[in-house]
Image 1 (spheres, rainbow, N blue to C red):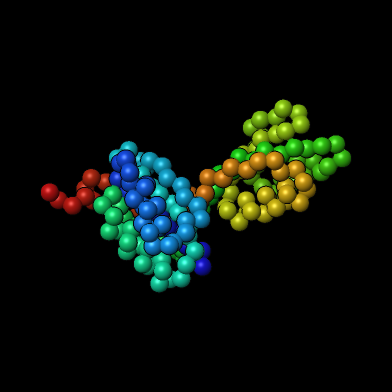
Image 2 (image 1 turned 60 degrees about the horizontal axis):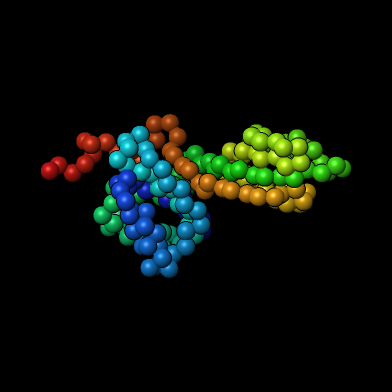
Length: 172
């Protein structure tokens, strides 16, 4: 089963290497990984997608929490969450092919570069949508290059999520 795990961790050199090393040492695969700073520049949010049973993902979460740089872990799978992915997609459109507008109909796609024959597109949406869009482009024979961000997630509205503040830190 696909699991989306969100991790708050210290924005320190080597923190990401320790997380990736934990997965590697235990034989777990990371399908996608996205990391960036949060509203607090000393804390990063890492979002990863992995496959595994409930037992395996519980083990992953426990192991993540043992890492010195990890502040909190939340398995978003099964809970209400917003999930998006960014992709840059390069397409080559030739005379006689479907128009880009027809291929991109129904998807959140913008053209960010157009040199006539090759266009670079920006896609924003759910990973499943992106997979369908990429399949559409592949079936049309126009896909040249693809760069994906991986999943980024957050709980909607006032739902409990991951948020760190100095007051959450253990007292000294």
